Image (cartoon, rainbow, N blue to C red):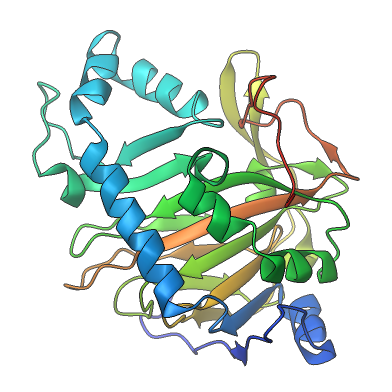
Length: 294
Ligand SMILES: O=C(O)CCC(=O)C(=O)O
């Protein structure tokens, strides 16, 4: 992939979130939709402040002790598998040394926080359950939107890792496929600090692979030999921008080699009229059912 990509078209968000016909046809054609000023700078700053508090209150020792009670990869695997209805903290690769000690201060070593911030934290709940977002989700075809997964993606300066090319429906599979990503730039994201990259129109090739349980193991299974067509574009997003990502559009982000962080909040929804696959990785306890906007 070339180091500088064409920058994708952006639209100014409407006040109530309802997309214009032009936005809808752009989304249908490209599989993504970039809406500037969807969230205010004040709302982004409030969420960033809450993230800083969560990180401050997080004791990395709790993770270290989890990992040291079992072999590292198994415990890390379990820490992830069990995180669908929790707020858990995931580190950049290489954050721990061979003894299990952090090699950097925790706030510089984290890669992401997930996966139920929107249900467990009041600030995230407020940000995620706005009328504006509800209007947008419904207009995009999610008749009965279910807010199933939330993540803060840190992309720390210099060490923020690459996110490989993937489709969100591979991870959050429904029949028919309804998974949709809502990715908020809490800080300016551009090609220098690892903004999203999307393959325009790539969603038309269908699902390429599925990440799912096979017994107790998670496997990535190839589901198609199709080769998505369409140019890769930089989904550059100034602070407050919302990038909507169709569940089938291939997307990625490059490592952040700059001195600027690129913090983002991603929320994934599906339509409850579709069937959620029981072998999806993300599990919720019976007392933590997936909820909608209400
Ligand atoms: O924030 C990123 O770099 C990747 C996010 C992503 O792939 C997603 O939200 O599906």
